[in-house]
Length: 620
Image 1: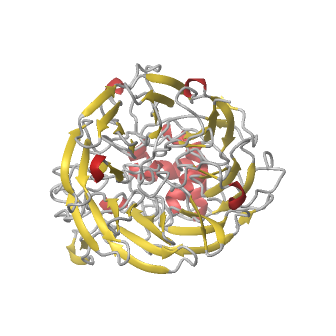
Image 2: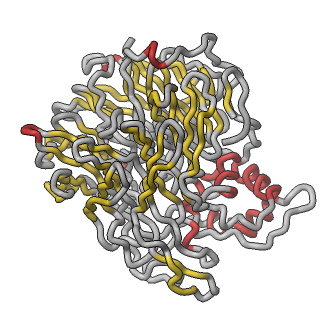
Image 3: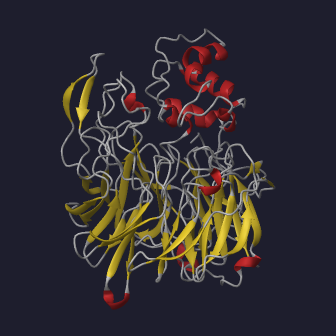
C-alpha cells in the first residue's frame, strides 16, 4: 500500500548485521517452549515470559538482551521478530494472541496502530519529477555511486562550512525504535526506510512528507533512484527478501519481486543499478535459529540476483556457494542436518564497468567445514553471474549464534569459527597511472587492499582493530582519491578503546593518521562506548563518522583533527510531530548532498541506545 496524501496501511544488523542482531536475534539460544497454550481471552503474559523466556533474559549471556533492555523496543519490533524474524522458529507454536501479549508485556508499550504517513508534517505541494530537479547533487544508494566509495565530491558545502553545521530539521519514525536504514538524497528529496517497514519520501529542505510506502518487512537497505522504462523509480529491499520498484513522485508500486524463498532470507544491502540492471544482494539470519536442535540446519546460501530494472524480471541468480545443500545426517533428536550453507551477502554490490564484473563481500559459513567462498571477496560476471574469482580472507569460519566452543549441540560446527564476516561493500578506486585497488574492511579488524585487475590478489593489508564477533570494521569505510577512511568498532574492548578512525594511503595501506575515540561523556550504561560501527562518509576535506555513544563527528582529512561534534542523544521536536529521541549511530552512515548532512540516530542493538529520529544538518 502507498500514500500520495495520507493513505497507508500496516506495519511494517548487525553482526554485520543489523538485521541479524535484531532484538531477539541475539537471543537465539533462548528457545520458546513448544506447547504453551494461549489463554481463552487474556493471556497471562508474565506466566508466558517465565515459562518461555526468563531462563535466558533474566540472566543474559553474550548477545542476549536483558529483560530491562527489551523495554527499549516497541511491541511492533518484538512481534516482527517472533512472526517473521530471527525468533520465528522458536515462537512457531505460540498463538498470535500470545505473541502480541508478550510483545506488549516485555516492552511496556501498547501497539501504536497503523503506521505510515503521519497526520502532521505533510508537504503542501506535490513533488516535481526527477528531471526538473536533476541539477541538484545527490547521494544515491549506499555508496553515492556504483563504486561504493561513499565519497561526495560535490556536497554543496565546503570543509570551511562544516564547523558551522546546525540542526535543520528532525523527522520522527512512528512506531519504531531502530533508526538503521541508510538515507538517500536525490533531486531535493530524502528517501529513508524504517525498521517497521515503511519507506518515506521527504522534502530535503523542510523534512515534510511527500508519501510513505508500506513494505512487507523492515527496510534496512539504502534506496536507489533511477529512470528506467520511461519512469523515475526508487528501488529498495526489505527484510522479507522482497525488492520493490516505486514511482518516485507518487510512491505507487511499479513492481515487486521475491529474491529468495528461504524463510530466513532478507535483503540488507542496497540494490546497485548499472546499465538498466539491478543487482540485489541476498543475506539471511538463519545462523540465529540454526543452533536450536529442532531446526534443520542449514540450507541458506547467499546470492546476488540480477533483475531487469524496468520490469523486475530475473536475468540471473548466482549463489556464493555453488553446491546445493544436501542432508549429511541427523542430530540426536532426529532432526535432519544439511550442508553446505552460509556466505550471506550483507552489503551492496560494487560495479566494475572496465572488467565487466561486480564485487561483493561474504559472511561466514553456517556449516563445517567452512566453504571456500565464505569470508571472501568475490567477483561475478555482470552478464551471466558466473563467479570469475574469489579471495578468501578467513578460511575456517563456520559459525552459528548461540554455539560455544566445546559444546555438545550437534547443530553447531565442530570447529567453531570467529565470525569474521565482510559487512562492508568493497570500494573500487583508481590510483595514479591507472592502477586500481579494491578496499574492504573485515570484522577481524583487518583492512584489505586487493588488485581488481589481477584476480583480487592482495596488494596490502592493515590491522586497524582488534576484531571479534562484534568487532573490527563493521558496516563500511569511505575513500576519496587519496585515502581510505576506516572506522573501528571493537565493541567488546574497553569502552574508551573501542573506536577510532584511520586514514590509510590507497596504494599501500600505510596509515596517514589515526584519531582515537574521544573521551566518553558517559560513565556507564547502554551505548557507553566509543565504538564506531557505522559507515563513514567523506567530502573534500572532511570525513564524517558516527559512534555508538550517539556522537556524529567530522574529521579533517589532512590530519584527523575533529572539526565538528554533535551529540545526537536527546529529545527532538520533529516536523511530523512524532515524539522522537536520538541514540546510537550504527548500521547506517550520513548521506551528504545539496548542502545537507542527513543521518539516522537510534540503534539499540549491539548494546546501543534506542532512538527513532532522522536528523538533517546545514550550515545555512
